[in-house]
Every structure is written in C-alpha cells, then in structure tokens.
View (spheres, rainbow, N blue to C red):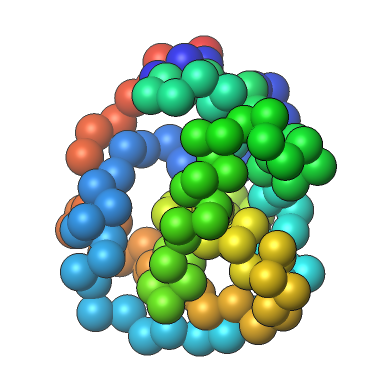
Length: 137
C-alpha cells in the first residue's frame, strides 16, 4: 500500500483485513440513513489505477464523472446491495471496512436506508491480517 493521504491518517484503520473473514462473522445487520455515510464520498479511498492502492480518487469524483473511471463505474453497477456494508469504529467515527461501491450504488439508486453491520473491536483478531505501520509515516 502507498502512504495514506493526510486527511485519512488520523482515523483510517491501522491494520489490514480479510474481507472474506469479515463476511463470515456473526454480527447483526442494522439500518442507517445514507446521510450518515456520505462523508465517505469525499475521502480519496480509491485508486484511479486498477489493481493499485494509490488513495488518490474520491467516490465523489466517480459519481460526478460517469464514464471517466470505467473500472469503478462497473464495480458500482455490479455491487450487490443484498449484502450489508461492513463498518467499524476507528478513533472518532464509524468507517467502512468493506462496501463503498455498494454505498455509491445505494446513492445512485436513491435508496436512503442502508444495511450495515457494525463490527465490534473484540472481533478484530478474527479478520486482521497484519499491521503495516509504513502507511502512517
């Protein structure tokens, strides 16, 4: 992974995780209003280059420029919103671990009630892969 943008350093997860392990956790699904999650659209959480973690593209850039980032357009179009968005508390907020493309799909479909799972910190060892402190230097 590349270094995180400054605006993410203070709150972004300081560990790597395995999405498949998260999906297998026994955690209830709840509903949140999309307005509570839309702040993710303004964070450069994606990459403009397929297959690289560059943290240089905001979901808002993709939303406002249809066709410019076809890789993300396709992922959004194919995002299966029957699966919840996976979130966890980090420092001062609940942030998405997995599901930002699903969140954008909810937004584009005009669906306001988003299905999420809040992963408790005590389950971290169940899905954490490694610590990569080089992201935070």
